[in-house]
Length: 331
Image (tube, rainbow, N blue to C red; front, side, top):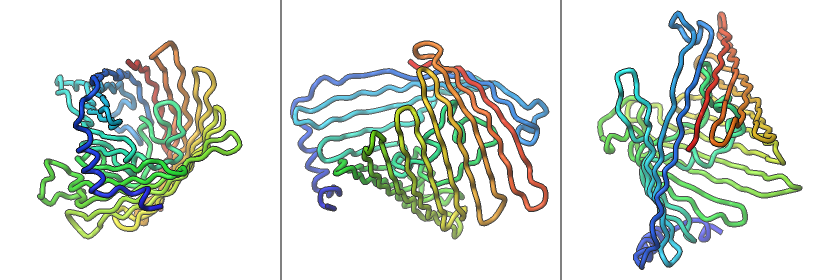
């Protein structure tokens, strides 16, 4: 089984060598979003004397995709964060990557989310609105498996065989900076993300089970990264339910849990979500969120979340409430 699932370096080299014959036309697509939002929370959450603010979240994605005559597919993607700050800030590239896929699996090269982030399924994946327990509310606190973010990396996903798929990512330095060798607090070097998932259909329901690991060496201090997570989800008709659990052995030691349920009907989605974080040092955090979104007309969606956070402090815990409403146009 391992020979079918794991791709050797020789096979990777061979796949790229085979991609040299005549190519089909490359198709370039442009897509993106522009979102305007209103966020509000109590004084314990937004300590600015006002308690509310407006915000924008806009991005543009450019993708070029093609295929070789031998069936090897390839693409390049650039995602641009296109919001300007109060000083007329610059346009920044958020994610940039090359990808090659075919019967050998899929290889991704560049600044893109890694295997652990892409393969993990938890309650946060079954949320409506802006994302519920993982959305735009100001009092959220999800602390599951740490990943490498959009630092430059190499990622490989195996083909799916019998419902199973494996994935792995390697990032030299999560601080990136051209793989800077300087020691920076909070950065992880020689970072590995490993993932496995299984999908199947049973009784009309789609089931996904996942397990991931995120491991690396701290550039500063003794707290290396060693995080593990398991999770899964079930979808039946318009209903989806997911659960995720993570335990952190070294840096930020502790454990976390997410539970989410989402239901879609027509142009609307509603959800409820719960997240729990229990660090070995510090206070527990419990977040309950209710979310909804509605398609007003093609490409335009109104979204909203209401979240409650109860911190179990040793002396006097703070309970906070936050809400967010946005209007988003996708193109």
